[in-house]
Amino acid sequence: MIDGFGRHITYVRMSVTDRCDLRCRYCMAEHMTFLPRQDVLTLEEMVELADVFIDRGVKRIRLTGGEPLVRKGIEHLVGELGRRVGRGLDELTMTTNGTQLARHARMLFEAGIRRINVSLDSRDPERFRHITRRGELAQVLQGIEAAVEAGLRIKINMVALRGLNDGEIAPMLRWCGERGFDLTLIETMPLGEVEADRTEHYLPLNAVREQLGREFRLIPSLARTGGPARYYEVDGLGLRVGFITPLTHNFCEGCNRIRVAATGTVFGCLGHDQKVELRDLLRSAGSAAVGAALDRLLAGKPERHQFRIEAPRPAVARHMSVTGG
Ligand code: SAM
Image 1 (spheres, protein in one colour):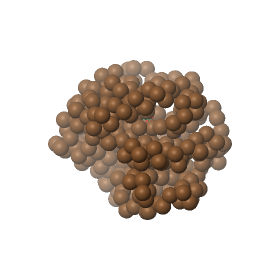
Image 2: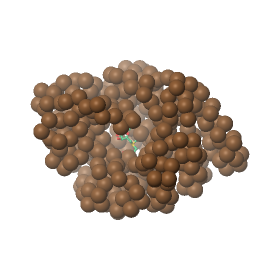
Image 3: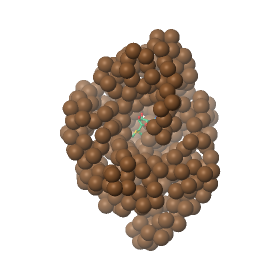
Image 4: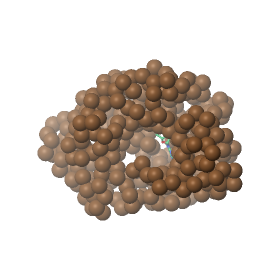
């Protein structure tokens, strides 16, 4: 799949549910209305759609959400897609908040997943509960232990939040170094209404990088994982730290991805409403119609997002949990 700017689309992020057991302040509203079940693709439909993508050259699929591990029957989806690894698909991965990892980590490994991203914005139990509005840190840490035991490689995703977790970034880096995890820091993106002023907690990562640079020797790394992060090796700690800076640096020229919402809506860009609806086509129109819709999506995939944190309204009305972060 090649878009109108010549970019090869080889990576699909699939949101398997819009539901989540946490309500992170920058991500969701406190009282979210979730989708009715019939609007969400069945697991079989998700496999069917994944096969369409694999047939068209997609090499990596990341399952995300909402929280992918709260989707009932997730083990069937992971098992099915895992069977495609090495047979068309190079890699299956997942982004999770970790709350359900203790019971699912082994299943993920056995299905063929080798690395996961775990979102963890704080290692202080009270701050963690405040940011997530309900999470139990201990549960996530147990989940991470289970993932390590199962043999999964872990990258921690941490959204940098001024006044909330900025004091924890250096300690998180050290902890990740000790545990053999990589770390990716993310700027808050203006997606969906969240009842709060995002600018209050917006922390530009160029300032964070400067500050970390005073404490650690950061060596720019050429490593790219096909994603938007820019990486640095942290001298002496044996880990890589990535910075995802949608606001301070636009990274769209190398974009290789599209995103599927749990409803079968496929978005060309996280920061635009450009989309095609595949659910009804999958249910009644057949593969040629699905293929034609994907062609339309590719032809119209936007060149870049235009996030502005100070804008009066979010760049798009949908939350990250809908598109799959
Ligand atoms: N529930 C899973 C998790 O927590 O990793 C997967 C979905 S979550 C939407 C994926 C990632 O998006 C998380 O790391 C989360 O912190 C991040 N995220 C959500 N809303 C965001 C926003 N407005 N700006 C930046 N990152 C956001």
